[in-house]
Length: 330
Image (cartoon, rainbow, N blue to C red):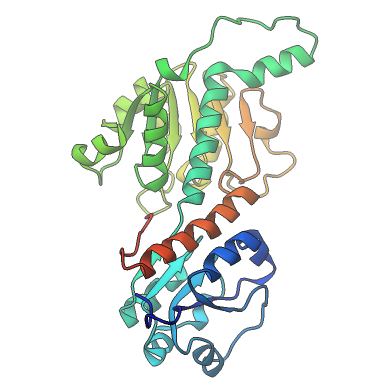
């Protein structure tokens, strides 16, 4: 896919602002430069005019967008005017490029699964903590207990039924991780067939069965008119005693007030990374509930994840320019 046998293809790294170094350390930069001539706007926040962005893209075969920000300046018209861009590779969060790429008929790929892996790891950690009740024993021992209470009233991930609501990228990755640990994975997703679910190691069930039988219930859905508020008092009441409820997706999927009411019964525990108001107010009930573990919406956000975004997207471009196609992690 290179422009000639004697030259490297040109890759334009679209401006990302001060977070540039979080995605592109020296190694990631060196790896990209090993096979591409790099046109790099680095950490600049300067907005470019149409003429300027067209000039920057002259002769470029690909665009690497590290985080999708400020991408509105790269329009379909700009891409058609430049005429040489064969691919747009998104490292992290790049929905803003979709229309421009479609208009100019330029292939668009999500070149990294780093965010998927990060959220799935957080989910696995939350499930393990909930099943083994690490948070309750930590508090008990720090409060003076020698051995904790009900120390045998615990479970194992490999003996648990994991219920995943949504089998998109993150849900499917979670399914494979839990299956690898020996857990039984069931899932609710009306858009998947059982044949597709089999590849992730999950068995499709009704929402009713999932709520009634799962030891762990984890949400992995986008917010749409159909999914907004889909978990309310009726659904929470069906969750079995002792279960672990996990939400690392979006708070809008739930009726947060109904969840608070149900959690006050202490029938089950919850691990939450998202809230109706963020950051969660200091007087939010979740902050003082013993059966709730909260984190500050960071399930998919950390330094290692961002560097992985850069590294994997660079590798995606390397494979593309070798003529092996454009890998898509979506």
